[in-house]
Length: 409
Ligand SMILES: [Zn+2]
Image (cartoon, rainbow, N blue to C red):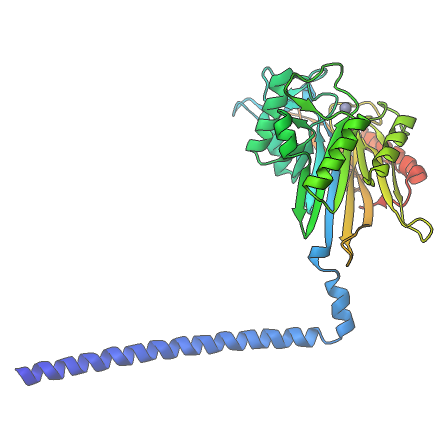
């Protein structure tokens, strides 16, 4: 019996060992297969990448040396937009479809920034003249690819203290970056700018407005005004606290419906430059105004960049040419000495399409050049013609007055 037991255990041991060996062998085979695939792939890569010069060209600058920023004009919130967003079935305000056609463009940058010209979350929701939109408007703006919004504009205080604070809290809860208004001075001291830290860049965005429609902020709330002393103090503080590679000012200025900047805008741009802020992006006039990139030369090595107005991004302003706007794509590079340079600056035209579908108004921000080639997408020829009128106007205006900033399509 004992001998039988010993024989049996020996057989079991042998069987287990052989099973283990075959498993290991199988694993080994698999590994060598993997190795083979890797080697083949690597060999193929080597073959493809033989001419060294071409590789360098293909790779281009390292991701760390470059950043693309997309700037958008004003996100307005008229009553017609609020009504259009309301879904009777779900009883929710749904804004996502508004940005569905422009989303690929807004998402195609390292960081996308726009001006939020409404307060959020104060009921009853309202349009002009004192804006309050549902929080879902901000969610849709985020879903469309916007990372940062400026909140200092002439509508910042439309819903007084509650509006300023609810807007900030909602943006925080949705993890949307913001700057321009602050709950109190402690918060402004903590975060005097929105700081973009990406691709080895540290860019501080600051935001100011010319005014708040005669409604002053309720203490301790703070709205950043275009006041020279405040700006100087803020920039010095941002430089010492944040030590950014670049400061960009996003400002709310200018006269409404004017195609060209006024003296105050030009003076303010010069003032920003005197403080070392050489990139200024503007909005508010509800129409487009020119964009100028002064490139460096041997005689004057400093470069600067200004957009006087990006126009309306989305609104219910239907009067030509308030029905469209532009997004600006700015690519920055960093050289060996850690100095920032503008690599590229182009704009893309957008237009707000308001069709009525089954008796209900809908809103779409359209990439204008793409839809210029799709007249069949419009239910009424009148709307297509209206968009083309805006496109023609924008191209004529910017074609004549822009400096070194062209259109990208
Ligand atoms: Zn405004």
